[in-house]
Length: 288
Ligand SMILES: [Zn+2]
Image (cartoon, rainbow, N blue to C red; front, side, top):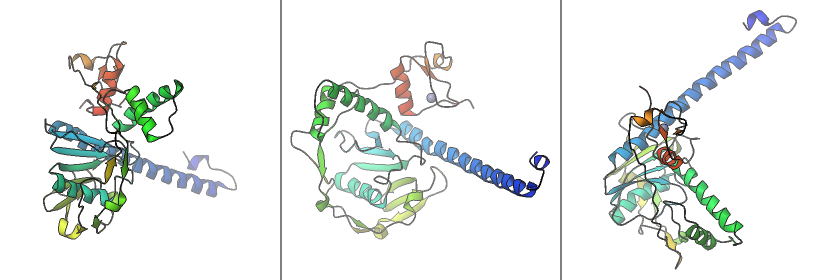
């Protein structure tokens, strides 16, 4: 097609340009496909961790939000986006030390594929921003972190709370040797003698970085965060819960139901908040 339509003085040049574009496009499509494959594979980590949850473990999806946990919890699976504040050598090493200092076991840490967003955090924080806006429109000033906490306490969003804290960097005693290519590692498993790393979830045996190699100086405190007096997390008794009434019925969406927008997922929900919880859990059901 390309060759048959290139005539005239500049036919050769046109042909070369078109072939160049074609080769570039073909390569881009290939890399786009690998990106989709990696993102689906990384999301599988979250599904698997949800299946492993019991009454003593939690899945924490990290954004600038979650720093405290109920004392009844003894273990955690972490998941976060590719933000440099989470995806770095220091955070990786700190998780290992926090487990030893507190007895609260961080089991593993999984990062989503770059460009795939912050998972549940974007959706929840959107509702919290809306609550802040409502509070402001009611004539209140929101100028400080304390004002934000007050607004979120007055206009609560289900399943959320907030506190005001400050990081005391001077108390950081952690010194480590950098692991080369940390940004290309997307899955970390915390073991007694070191941290096992994978580039992609479930692919291969991983590479063990021993504690002896990694740490020059350990953390002496489990947290560098100090909560401002009187600004601790407030109680919020409204929770978000997925109610699965009839598994088969969900496979046949009616006009009244909200269909899952994930390509290939056949589930539908009513009311809308059930769809939101389904999207947060990410347990989509595809035809096989
Ligand atoms: Zn779905």
